Length: 158
Image 1 (cartoon, rainbow, N blue to C red):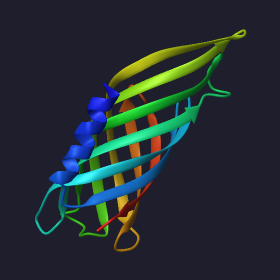
Image 2: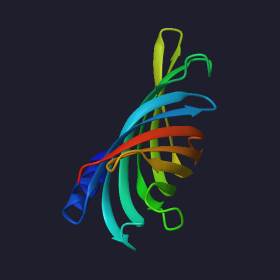
Image 3: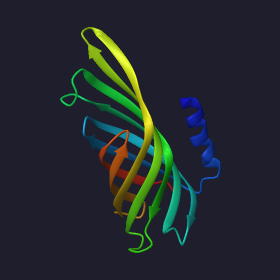
Image 4: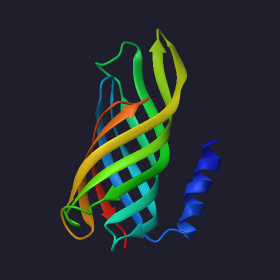
């Protein structure tokens, strides 16, 4: 399944106009995680004030101090996102996304290590600002399987 998703994301580069890379930190109710994101643009209109993109993210995190016996997790996300700035111009924008989350939780009970899966839909809404021409900072509220606040830095490779 993961191989198929990776192939779909990388094959989208053939139709992508531009690519954005980013890093993020998420503080959730039961964990915290850091990760990286790659987003090929699929379609833009209204002089780049509306941007539709696909995205793929990989996050690693820990649960120390949050949940008993649950010590770490890894998460792969993929989906569709939209950056819109028609009202305030290009410097400020709002953000919407819908995606799917594939997560593995690793727990220790005694001397034995267990792995469990938590998969499902993930949604986010946020607000961001373009600091330089190619660099932007964004704050998102994420809900679904993985809930929390996410801070993201993005860099446009075009």
